[in-house]
Structure formats: structure tokens, C-alpha cells
Length: 128
Image 1: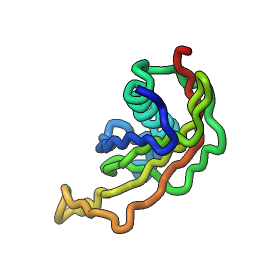
Image 2 (image 1 turned 180 degrees about the vertical axis):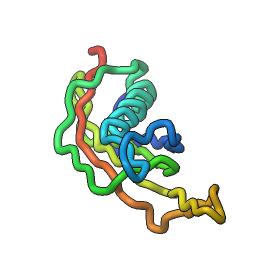
Image 3 (image 1 turned 120 degrees about the vertical axis):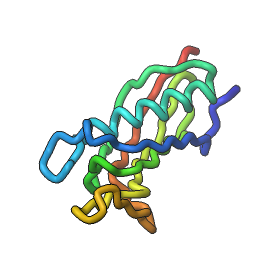
């Protein structure tokens, strides 16, 4: 196992209504950052055989809202490999969104193209 530039991991997640904190069923930005931690952990396991430790984030961008009822696609990609550090590019895309109405309370729609909600660069460290 070795980390290589371009290695990626992708997760999908439904955002439950219990995570909505604000009007309009908005979810806080920390929700996306927690998801970045999940994909980073799997990426470290796949590339280095260890869960690794998150060291830092840089260039975090909140480009669009995440709402309860969304289906998210979260990706991490290795963009730099050091001796013990790995720099990762992260993205959260909304691939489907709830579209409930009184007539159709469970309505939802696939978004084409997906909507970029959050992006960041992060650094993880793994045992040497």
C-alpha cells in the first residue's frame, strides 16, 4: 500500500432531517467538515493501512447550502504526498434534493448537474 497522487475515495450520504439546525432545513457547515473526516479516514486506510490523523484544513469554501433531505456525494483526492503527510482535495456535491410539498411530502429530485456545496484542502498525517 502506498499513497499516490490521484487516489480517491467517494462516499454518499442522505442528510436526515434531525441534522437541520436552521430555517429552511439548513444544515451547519460543520456537517460537511465531518464528512471530509470520514472520507479522509478511508483514504488513509486504503493508501497507508492506517486511519491517519487530520492535521489541518485550508481554503474551506461554502459555495451552496446543504439541507436536510439532500443526498450528498463526498470525495477526497490525494494531491500531494510527503513522507508522513498527505494533502487532500475535498468536495461535497448535492446529487439529489428533497422537493416536498403538501401534495407530495416525499418528493425529491436528482440534480443534474450536481451542486458543489463545500470544498476544502486538508492535510492528514500517517505513521512513518
